[in-house]
Image (cartoon, rainbow, N blue to C red):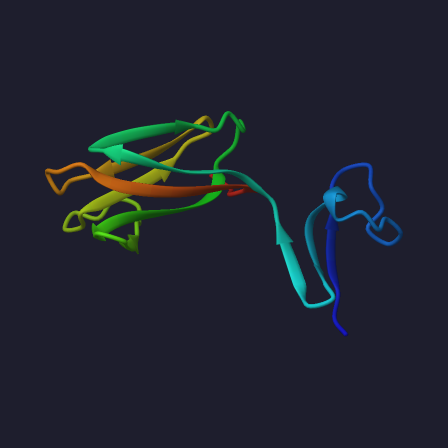
Length: 113
């Protein structure tokens, strides 16, 4: 069996058994990636404050038809949706001309600038 554990500061990855004390815990056929927030916004341009003071890992999706979503990428000149983050907010953009649902998932993982 393979095991990968990355503990948070002050915890020992070799001895600590509490998964809440890890940034990454891949053990016993499961993996833990810590989620900060998730939600749905509706409109043209929306901002979600995360206040992490770093660029977080995130996933965003735009509604292409009722109940169907596609992943949003950064700036795409020809795309209907856009998303990017800075150290305090996640920015979601909808260029379709109508109000569409945009879903987001923000994680505690730090993405280097």
